[in-house]
Amino acid sequence: MDRCARARDWSEIQERMLVPLFDTVYDRLEVGPATRLLGLRCGSGLALLMAAARGAAVTGTDPVSPERLALARERLLPDARPGAG
Image (cartoon, rainbow, N blue to C red; front, side, top):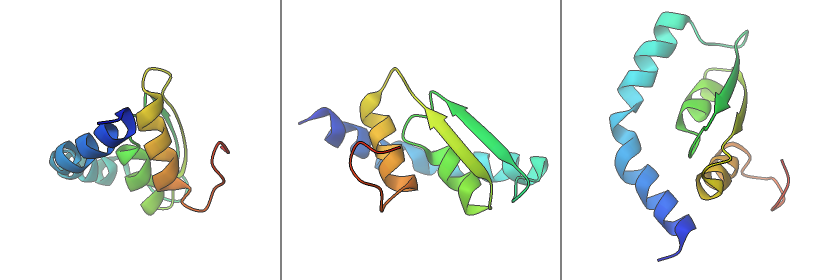
């Protein structure tokens, strides 16, 4: 199994547990259109994706896991050219 497929599998299996946590934190912090979020080691981008869905401006980086970063880019920028962003 290639590394990109493993990153996708991990996100599909594990991230479900994190959604309620991020929802609670983002509610408490009132994340919305006035929010700017920088995700360091953003992984597959779940936190950024959820903040963006609330209208936040998001940016992420993950030098440790380029496979997960590629997945985050795909999720956040579905119309982007490969290698862009």
